[in-house]
Length: 425
Ligand code: AMP
Ligand code: GLY
Image (cartoon, rainbow, N blue to C red; front, side, top):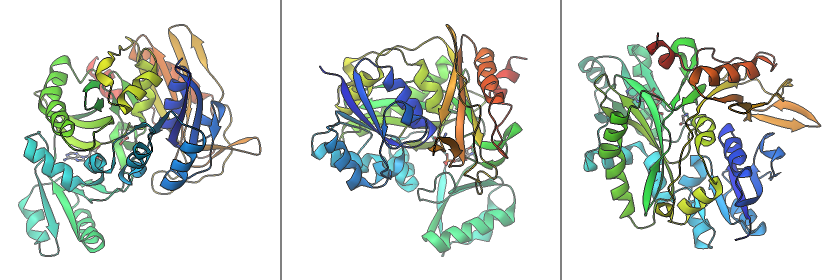
């Protein structure tokens, strides 16, 4: 087979990580990204087409004769890009619109988990006929309130402040007609990325994200401020339970649906003190920044693996994983996540470490090259990633690279991996 032309859709650190993995795959000849970022530009061709411009992206895939399209974000999946591509015979990594509803609608995901007996939080729907005061006084804090819309991390509020909870509920009902209130799940979170098609599924090494903006898991929720893999909180027995109770029933259901689920199922887990996993959320795409720590641990040809998934042949491969550890630290713009100051010059972001078992590099996200200058263009600007024989080594590399980077007003968390490190003390 001649080397593939791959089109990656998206512009985050996740897409740069996918591009790096694909650029190292013998099966891949050329990489195109739409719209891409400063990182993907160094590995192939960026096309200035928005990730939600489905028609423009499908035309691009035809023009470049793409052998495989890898869809990064959920938006185009929910909008049906994989269905459109499959109709014209182009393999797409990512589910069709129907499968993408697992992320596109929390009501759908909750109903399905109920039907399949998959462990998750109990939930109720509140609308203009509900007695919100009675709900808040009848259920102890913290309250978990979720809008049923794709809101890029802004649709969920977890709070013990009754006024904040009440306001978010009322505003959401006014805007959307209803809102979902969920039981608060206690425990520790982990992310399980599962490659999946109708022929089978493969769990990638579990990782742990850090969703809050500030040290000690304080501050507002973000898209994710750092991650590491593997996450030892997912012990072999937790993984066994997650597979048996969560992944297997969902795979069985999806496999029997019309229009196969071909892509990755991101299972956000809450693991309680007894090691029982429950689902916090499903996403239908790779996580960001989980991808930055997961892709480097996949051994073998990433292009072959993603193509096999996109064509329903995953069970013909048995990928193996490195015994290394990886860690990534996100550099965010001043003001992120509320409002981000962009357009500032980034310097020092070219340090790479390659000392055999120790490796480190930068994953670009909201960073663009403008007239030869590297400039911030988003909330999460970049992530520095380290790969080493143990977690401490991986964190050292990631922070060493981070310390060489300057961007006015930016910030990063200095405690990535703290849960795991404190368990060992
Ligand atoms: P989501 O967008 O559903 O992933 O929610 C964002 C974050 O809110 C999650 O990563 C959790 O930290 C928190 N969260 C969401 N649902 C719950 C829940 N039912 N119990 C506890 N925390 C939750
Ligand atoms: N890092 C969380 C997510 O990708 O949804």
